[in-house]
Image (cartoon, rainbow, N blue to C red; front, side):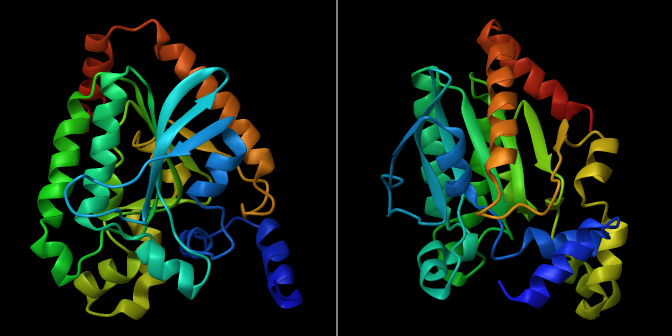
Length: 275
């Protein structure tokens, strides 16, 4: 990181950030990604691969982990930090097989009664022709449908960008949390500005009126908790936030430990009915 970038980030800490500035922080290449949180929060993690239909999608990381002696299934979107990694991760934009892999792991978690922890960080699902040919829309819709009825607790945490249906495909949860500088929206501010004003350069203006920041969404009842960031979280300084998240995740697991499968599903259903 250059000295000018460090000075700029120090200045951001001293004042209230605009929605557009938070969009930029959520997209920062230095921001902590799913694998960083997995490494710091969970005691052990065994990665699982493939959707058993087409291939393994590198933009979705998933597997079995343990925290405080309890096994859980962890699933999250993963970006890369350089061009080579982003080629492997497709810039955090999953293909249909990525969402089918996620659903396979969720159904496995349900079978073995493991709670599910999802980390959301994507600009949106990949919209290329090959993804459409393999059923991108159906894959996302199937996740929404199936997650609504999963009989184990689901917690989704927005750690960076939460873009469009690509994010919602991991967001049908009993609770949704957001990091303070994360965003969660129906589409990108650039896309919003292009549709509404035919001018993507008005993205900053669009971000202000879209209500996409964590505190705005908390006020609207879209998310249950906002995880504070004393400074924008990076892969280097994320230990403190990860310690906080670990304790909150343990509390979440304890909260749902005594509930029946029917109560878990009904609570999730009522959460989305109130919208």
